Length: 205
Image 1 (tube, rainbow, N blue to C red):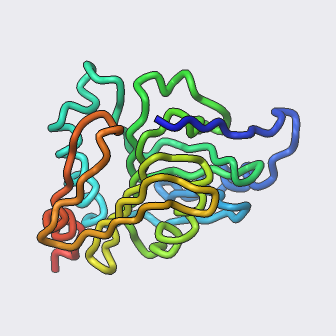
Image 2: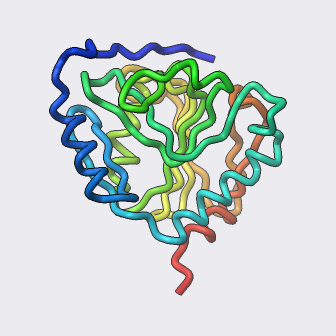
């Protein structure tokens, strides 16, 4: 898989944004606080359909044998990803497929080096513009090989591959009734059922 190494600031340098982010996380348990391109963002608690869509995505990944203790990857929710786009930038993807030795890639602020990430996935909420725009650039700059977006607003699944400095070279969009194939580089051949995911992520009433 393509490797990337984040440029990390010296540990003795002040990090006012990270300090502010950590204070916010202490005050707002369950909220997602990130720093993307030098901007601190706060996402509210996710709703039930968001969690349902995430579970629906995870099932085929686990059924394919990923994260079963016998493969070289793990499927994890909500782990920090250190970004090279700024001295304090980091993101917390909803779901990640990472190398099994990800613990060896812990950097700082409880985040991991992008070199160990094979896929990141976001399920959109009110902050869908962040997932569809800002994070596309941020994850591409970090050379994350595969970025998947479950776009609940438009009932689509996006699969972005082949990262470039300003975005991804390939951007496939799948609608309900289609299967969204993922690159085998994540550790197995997996296709996502768009209809099931969109239905899971839709309001139940």
